[in-house]
Each structure stands twice: as structure tokens, then as C-alpha cells.
Image 1: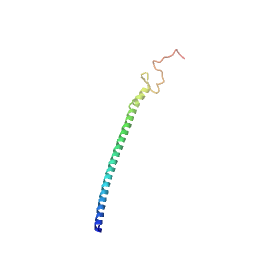
Image 2: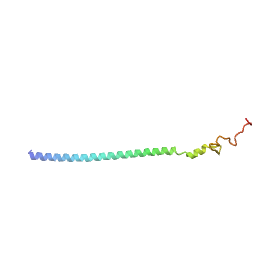
Image 3: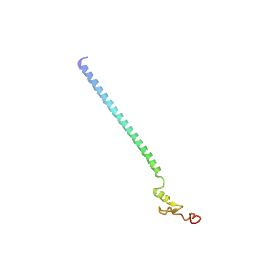
Image 4: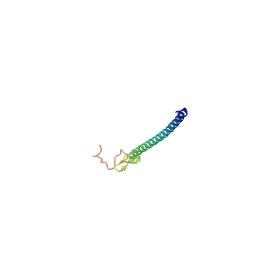
Length: 101
């Protein structure tokens, strides 16, 4: 082979290698982006599931009666609404005992 043919062959090999390298870089970048997007979708789905679970816990924790209703029940004695001051007083239907003590 003469020097011109060797240089021509070297140029062809170099351009082929550069084209192959560009193709590999393009495919590598495409695969990276596909993996990145898949990971992002998975993370968002996991976060959404976690939020739904937390919302369910909150809904179950707050499903009972309100604080005002619990306080109303707390101060009701035998169907009669009492206050803090009257709660300890005898109920009209209480047994008075056998007389004075």
C-alpha cells in the first residue's frame, strides 16, 4: 500500500469510529433519560401512595365525634346538662338516705 492509501484508510476508519462513538453516545443518553423518567414516575407514584395512606390515617383519626360533642357528653349526667360548678351536686332523683347524718 502506498502512503496515500494508508492515509485514506486511516481517515475512513477514524470517521467510522467517530460516527460509531456518536451513535453510542446518543443511545446512551436516550437510555439515561428513559431510566431517569422511569425513576421519576416511580418516585411520584410512591409519594402519591404515601400521601393517600396518610390521608386515610387522618380520616380515620378524625372520624369520631367532634371535641364540642365530647365536651357536651362529658358534662351530661343522667340526661341532665351540667356545668363544672353543678356537676358535683346531687341529682334530683338521687337517694336522699335514711335521714340526717
